Image (cartoon, rainbow, N blue to C red; front, top):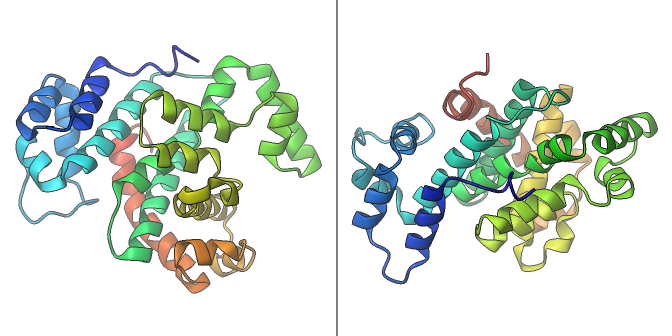
Length: 273
């Protein structure tokens, strides 16, 4: 777990700079520029259809100014985590399907915030992208137990997280939350990931957890080719109260996520065909 939780040094330096009371755009730009791959990717993301800025952003300092410190932090997390975990493989996980679902969850969570407030929040994207990493960790560290849990849940039509807690001793959501905490991400991200299947337990961070809950249902709907109205009708009614959304908006969230999926995949998992 310690090895899996290890991210590049530049990540920790960026975190330290942004947590400083006198965080500097110039110092942050120099830190990002010290990692050419991160620099190239961040500029590519900033100029992508996901943002749609009318003018090209061609320097890191410009990206930091336009996107803002918080969005740069969160996009850097998404880039570095994806770079780290796509280099890890388990013969028990189909990487194409895993990352397609992860990126879909990311754009769906982002879309939920956008439809709810009219603003795009990259924290939603990061939360959705990291939400299922616990599964990858399980299959890399305790594959036999993870397989037993997955098979039992399928055979008994049982909730996978509940079966994982019985078989493994914890579930994938708890592991994902621990990873977010280990990386020093804002507490709201780790709490939302940990509570994604039981959002009512998230307390004051309940809105983020419910947004992720909705994103998970969009992934299920897409993978199962289920109509949006049918999914929305079966959702926990508390989801609408907690997110200030309405059931009829579920389809709009799904449509926005589908619209952005190809662009996001080309950025964060270009091997997807």
